[in-house]
Image (cartoon, rainbow, N blue to C red; front, side, top):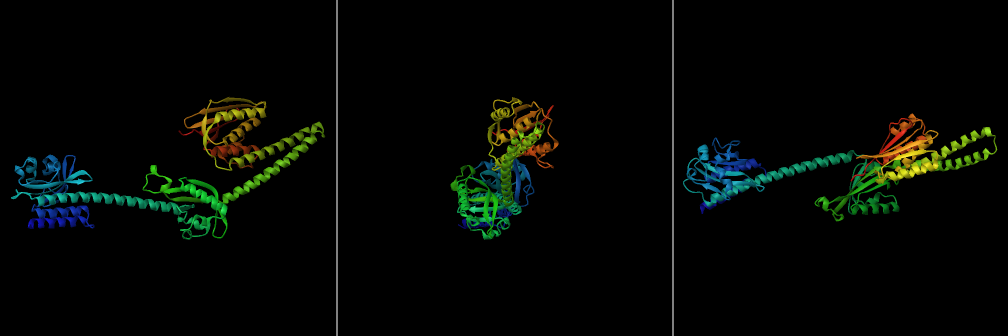
Amino acid sequence: MSVVMNGATYRERIHHVFVDPDETPGAKIRRGLEVGAEFLGLPTGYLARIDDGTQVIVASTGDHSAIQPGKQCPLDSAYCRRTIEVDSVLAVQETAASSDVPDAAVERFELGSYIGAKVIVEGELYGTVCFSAHGRREQGFTDTECYFVELLARHVGRAFECYAYTQTLNERNAALSERREIYRAVIETSFDLIYRLDTDGQFTYLSTPVFDLLGESPEAYVGRSFTAVLHDQETTEMAIDLFERVLAGETIEQQYFPLGTANGNRVYVDIRVTPIYDTDVAPDERTPDDIVGALGMAHDATDRYRRHQQVQVLNRVLRHNLRNEMTVVQGFANLLRGRIADEDQRLVDKVLAASQRLVHLSETARKLEDAFEQPPELKPTDITPILTSLCAQLTDRYPNVSITVDAPPTAVASAAPRVEVALWELLDNAAKHADETPVLTVSVSLGEESVAIRIGDNGPGLPDEEREVLLTGEETSLIHGSGLGLWLVRWIVESIDGTLRTADAVDGTCIEIRLPTVEN
């Protein structure tokens, strides 16, 4: 009975050793070996790591010179060779007489008695916990002693598992802390407003630019509905519709969205809002039911919106007045044809030509406005039929033009409908500025990454100022008719992710547009 109580006491001591939160795994293992050596009456205790057929001493108690941390030997010369093969504790009263202990181990370590159990960490063999003495043991090992060694081995395995788990957790927490700090820095250094909403549409976070944008601190909006920053009922209805789309799983974008400031003014922002999902749900399994909020970004577009409005108004007024006035000029010029001498007819012709150029300029301005009213929606576009149709229109307008087209039956690129406007501008410009008998060559070639469209003519070549417009988007002189058309071409091509350049030509001008192919 006293032995059981003694064993229970030592088991309790072992338990307290390994549950101590302030001790490292190494310290716990050393103390556990000391308690075990005391309980078993065996002076040498050690934890061995078994790795690729080698025994390496990790921790030990006692003064045996060959059983110290860092010492190693082949597993075939180790007492624990048999220990890792059995399911229970291996206890040997006299090692010299036991077939469970290799002769090479007895010769190497000269230990007369031995008891050991294997250590399992996360389902895999780590090594063994062993105790031994130089002489044979007078009495065999009891069940209580065997159970104690097995218990100690389990505690050691769990200590390693807990340490590994703690290390992994600490690394994850450190990574999360670093990531949070990076996100905080990115958000705080952004000129844009970052905000977060819960599923009820209430603000749970706003970044500091909200003060510059709306005139209130972030704290003034947290806990309030997003409708608090909206200017009128129409805007509120639009915002509710957009938010419902986000809660349905859609990422939404809206340009020039109006917001109301604290002092009652109106600002305009470009917004992008995306749903936030429950992180416990795998990305490929997420549904709208797993949405827990929304994250949005708002970019102040007030100045751009006002400039856009001013340009629209000026463009429409000037274009309307210009066309109306030029119609009057052309009407009177035609009346003068029958009232002036033949030698003055060329003056009337110059008036008519100038007025026609101004009308064309107003039409180009209209195309510019129409082309950039909304961002383009890129989609697969067959270039060949577009060019075929445009070339037919060109010959109708300019009967003396000769056009050669070299294009495959199909040439699909990533583009938008506005590409037709750009191609027409180049074709029309080539026909008007080529030789007296214009000769145009149009070719289309397919590459792995792009579709190349080349339009060449036999004209005098592109003036330097117009080449700058086409290739760099810069012009130092005042914009004139043909220059505005080239601006239109450049802006359209860039807006649909294409590139524009002048190609080599023996005579005249050759301009090349490259459009990306459609991704499979």
